[in-house]
Amino acid sequence: QSLRIGLIPADGIGREVIPAAKRALEALGSDIPRLEFHELLAGFELFTRTGTALPDETVQILKTGCDAALFGAVSSPSRKVAGYSSPIVALRKELDLYANIRPVVSVGRNVGGKPVDLVVVRENTECLYVKQETIVRTESGREARATRLITERASRRIGKMAFDIALGRPRKQVTIIHKSNVLSITDGLFRETIRAVPDLPEVAGRYAGVALAEQIVDSAVYRLFREPEIYDVMVAPNLYGDILSDAAAALVGSLGLVPSINAGDEFVMGEPVHGSAPDIEGKGIANPLASMRSAALMLRHLGYENGASRIDKAVNEVIEEGSVLTPDLGGRSSTSEVVDAVLRRI
Ligand code: NAI
Ligand code: MG
Image (cartoon, rainbow, N blue to C red; front, side, top):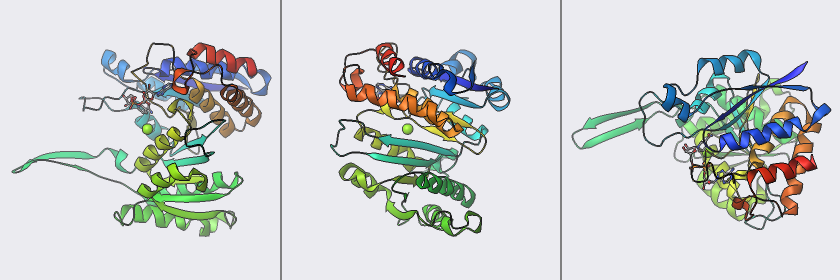
């Protein structure tokens, strides 16, 4: 039996860092099943060439022929482009990957000086990202509106995911991030639903040992920078979680270090938190560590803890040793030099 992995590098430095993750997996040898890779297409560049950003074939192969996947990054334009919508957002929906899990852990030196070890658990399917936007002309100018969807079902399942993750960590604490002082209906429902998770009959008291806290999103960002040690698992609606996890990445030195997985009940897709980084694309200096760590997270989620920790350990050693790092971490090495350093340690 083999482990079938879909590889979707997509755009920009996604194409430079996904091969690094692939090589890390290959280096594990007999710690994991035999690997079978499927290279799949998606992205904005594909859209400009062919008119489609996410071919049906990519979705079909993921659904029927893969156990898991790794996604690079997509160069979504900030302006509206007729006919285009983000393939990563569509994939999360198609594969019902309802949780975006982003561990942010400092190794060695880090920017704020305080050690960081937290996980942002971001709801991945709703909030403002349902992309129901309208614009109308009024007498006083254009008026744009967006729908923000929060459901009890999605809030409950992301809440359970957060509690389960907390159970597996030493501090066992969940902090709900919200703004229900202003958005009392939508954020109110998110907050209330998650607060009620430990009392659900089906969890049978399993979360009794998990401490529950909450924090308004703006002050959460402030406290994240001043006292990151107060956080363990932060659970947030889609938009706040997106912003929080990039902010947390700043604390550990670079977006190029922070991995994530998009997880559902049936499938998992690893994805570095960073984007396609057009400013460094093609220069051979993209940091491959977030992508390699995403492969480790994917393996851990699938139950291959040994393989996952071998990748993590090798990555951490390279960061701690400090002589082979890409420029985003103050180093002078190339992507491929960093990849080689990690592979040697694996
Ligand atoms: P970005 O994450 O691509 O880059 C932000 C800054 O971090 C840049 O200075 C970049 O050079 C640096 N950086 C990011 N990853 C790095 C790495 N691995 N090694 C070294 N430096 C790294 O965010 P930005 O510039 O706002 O967006 C660029 C494009 O990426 C946009 O089109 C955006 O839509 C897309 N994007 C895609 C995401 C995804 O695919 N999930 C997530 C975020 C942005
Ligand atoms: Mg983001």
